[in-house]
Image (spheres, rainbow, N blue to C red):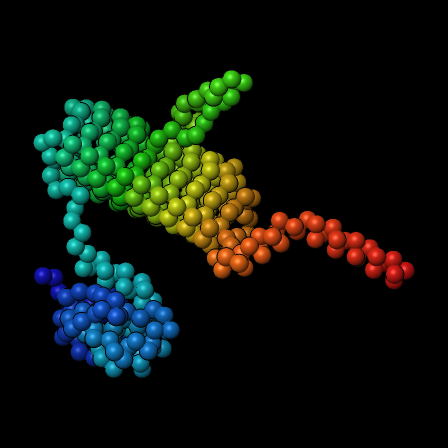
Length: 342
């Protein structure tokens, strides 16, 4: 069992230690469920009142909250960030694979770096390049001429089409498909004519992609995902989308083709973003946002309608449906008022 002294943990986090540094910490838990031997954290002052009943051996908190807990504490500027780093220390997630399975089908022209692991029933096609310490889970498909950088990991049943480039230290969750054709067709007056997608997908370093997300290859140019991007589950990223470094995309987001998103953006869950537009750096789109035009100024943008009681929603919907009529009536009143003034 892994454990760490509280004093050593304080040093690792560059935190100020208050209390007994010799305490052994065996794990991390929520404030509600934490027990002796575990550490928890407080990142929101609304939960200060919970500290009095907390059973954890230590709490990570801000200096402003120190007086509300009388046990051992680690004081940091950002407790949530500290929680993320502590969780990494106690992460017990197994590797997707630890060896090259006998049932894996690997083309003789594929190049495998040192210490590569490939799970059962995975197919590696011709001229694939896997860097050192790459781990491929069971049931994956890696298409021709695809390159995957060192230390990247794919969980089970990931499909990577041909000629895709994935950088170093990436993590791709199960069910994700990268490099499939985008939605491109021309209509000849009778039927839809498929447009083959001749570009590919280029993914930078330290990118994490959630389960069952799809990233289409480019039509002529390439779809590009920058360094340190994080993408949640069940997102659709269409052909020729470009996402800048350090951008985060929450679950269920749909991005249409030829969209360009800048750096350090945050896209809230279930948002829909139009194609052929640009979003500048440092933009936050809150959940269920519908982005139809380019955004040229950093900031927070919203458009989703919060849930309401049904009766209230019906009244709101009725007003929206009649808003043009209301506008016309208001203009008539304004005109009459102006005539009276004259």
